[in-house]
Length: 235
Image 1 (cartoon, rainbow, N blue to C red):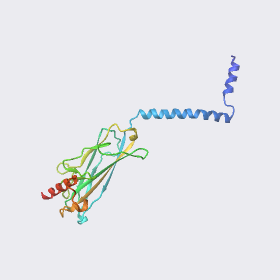
Image 2: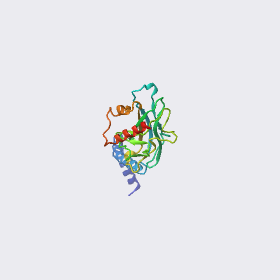
Image 3: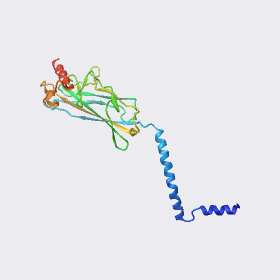
Image 4: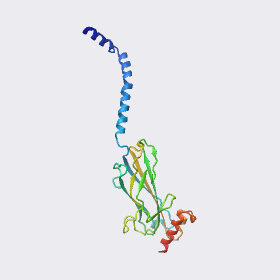
């Protein structure tokens, strides 16, 4: 084939008008888009899907029939470097306890609510013992199995579980479970701490404040909490 004939065919293949060029681009775009999707998928597979930013909230709910001007218990809630990315399987420093900054002794219970939110705002499963673990202090606290952990002793005025004379916090660290699926990519871990406290006089103050005046059945963990707190009052 002569050179002139080759050039003639090349010119015939070129879009001659604006309309022809637009039609040609429409045919090429799906191919480019498919390439971009495949490339993004490959990049996602090649990256770690379990990085977390950690955020902390504190909410205190205090209950007492006594003079509230002299009664105050706040959360001990220390979360160093809360916005530092975390990887599963690595322990995260997170101290949770209670501090009685009032002028009266108190009984204390704590509720800890973990939540994990995906990058797109979707709520993901988040539960202790499944997606999250913590080094719960079972020596000084009782899991009431009602959503609360109960401190086994009277918390004296001016005293914190973080400093007395050895720490008695509910826990000191948390850990994200390994092997979570890719929904947890870039997810945000949030741990909400709620503290409830009541006075120790009269002796049944916690029964009235926490259990609506009814002593739990003796077959429940809460009955163990009841007998434990009564023993603390007898000391």
